[in-house]
Length: 496
Ligand SMILES: [Zn+2]
Image (cartoon, rainbow, N blue to C red; front, side, top):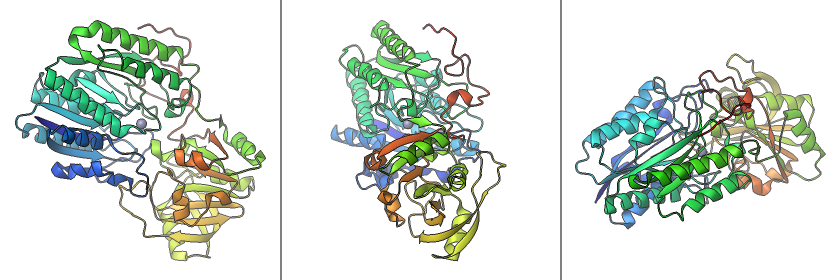
């Protein structure tokens, strides 16, 4: 048996004005693709907590003795709209590999589902419909998707079945790959005619409202797990969409895959899951206490025991923000707060200046942007350089580390990073010479906080700051989102 595999992963934040170019992608071809199953992307994360769907796909296919035909692995960290030519290069890589693959029994690709490129607002639908054209209507195709996929009809019609991450934060990416292979092998071996039915729910929702360990998302996921016991359903999942893109495809969806001879049951389960989700729309609040910035700071200051971890949620790089907004730092300085750390503000020029000045120097910085708009002024701040860390992996694709300078201005310590990075693991703070337990308050550029931060937090808070990842969805100025849609519109009825 021969199965073609590949992966195209990017979550596109169209509010971030910086284009994502080809060089932002890890782009591997052919046998290089097997690297992903070794978890190499998780350097700096000793527990290898998150692996990739491709790892599960490769391992499972190997365990079944299937010949694997590797094609393209393209992955970039969440960031702005993808340059049109970058997407076309990736797409052409896939199409030529599929054309030259020879006889295949099936295709299993790991996709994100919320990509957006210049000139193509639905890259996954475009790619899969093009692949379908080449391989014909009979070829079994199964794809994995991120739970935050914004899925179109074109994508659904081009693919037989999907498996979707069932945890957020995503802890089951590898298992989602394994599930996809199990589905594909079942289709191939039993020669099944399989398709996916979907019900589209008119909602825009953030991951910060839908962590799967938190009610009511937890109970909604229980409904999904129950469908695993339904013998007529091969897979059922929710895809929740990604709110920080201006796209006509916004929606939450159910995706229910099974044999075409059971269409009625598929439709009924898809509708049942959709209705359950819609009915919970007013209960899907933030999964962590959320407040306007000043209120969050007041609450944190009143706590006796630290560290209180505050997410600067509007400038969250893991959801594609630029991560250079200095609004919170400015506020901390204005309020003369003590014993506070900010991790991290990205500003390469400021980092270079600190590095050249050296430890112990007093520097004057024009740092980042005071507001999340391209024209905003930088924050002018005088600070002492406490520490300079260099020699950390400086590839553009690195996401967990960056060279950085640690500075202090009065009671506020802040980290200026050379490149945009995910502040995912507090081990990074130690890497730059800081002990997280030395601070009463730590502000991180993040949305929902990773299990690592949860572990050290005396209390976790969201600060509802403005920015590319504004959590106040009703206030985001969408131009092309379909209407009516919740929560932009509240008083409308929706029936399947
Ligand atoms: Zn996601």
